[in-house]
Amino acid sequence: MSPRWPRLVAAALLVCTSWAARAEDRNPSCPPEAAAPTAEQVRTGLREARDRGFLWRIDKGGHRSYLYGTLHVGRPAWIYPGPHVLQAMRASDTVALEVDLLDPEMQRAMHDGMTSQPPLALPEPLKARLAAQIQAECLTPAAMAQLGPEMQVATLSLLVARRDGLDPAYAIDLALDGFGHGAGKQVVSLETPALQLAVLQAPDPKQALEAVESGLDDLESGRAKPQLLHIASVWEGSDFDQLSHYASWCDCLKTDAERTAMRRLLDDRNPGLADAIDALHARGRSVFAAVGSLHMIGPQGLPELLARRGYTVERVAYGP
View (cartoon, helix red, strand yellow):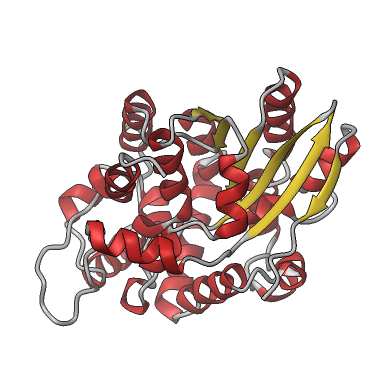
């Protein structure tokens, strides 16, 4: 293990909130702030780490790469890759992420893209509802105002379970990013920030307003947090059967607009992700490709798409 890795993990944990809203105060009703681990916590975390998420071996052309399903929120103990995941990373020379958030150019592009979205005029009642949710999460309104309303709601939806210990600052993606750089791997982005931000935005103002209202409905009704906690439990337990039936329990595909948004977020992006992974592998690289777990399910999931491209795809069973 490279001695640089703990420091890079600590940096990675803070990247995802470095541009964003800060807690206004630390009164007891506010969620806890994310904190970078100490050196002793890193040593303990690595020693006690266990496998979570979903891992596949993918073989083609006489050499092997890996596919790993991540979660974009986490708990402090989850930032340490378990034995099977760590072995797969060590066996790879390239770490491929949706976006390399430790690349300063990517950080700038993500920040600029998030703070320069086309303006969306909200009716006063929606403005008031959004402001109430920002206050409830103890976030600074001025910082949140740099983002468009859709991105504000998306941010709130990822932050809603911080009081239950789930925080995007502890996402495994960021820790893998830190490991890749610290271990001297080639770290690459499979997508651009512009592409990622584009799929988060509805194609027209009417659909954007519907997305904001729907997101606020979920936050205000209390539906958003249980959904996030449930998918986190599925990821922690590496329950791929449950993940594969996501549409039956997520309560997130009720309308045509929601189904269209989900296709835009997953199915429409997956062929490009598969092509990027295949191109790296075809150049002789042994790739550890880590993307959100929902990109792995269904006939348009990455394991299926890569199998159609001639890969032998085998899910890795972690065991007890």
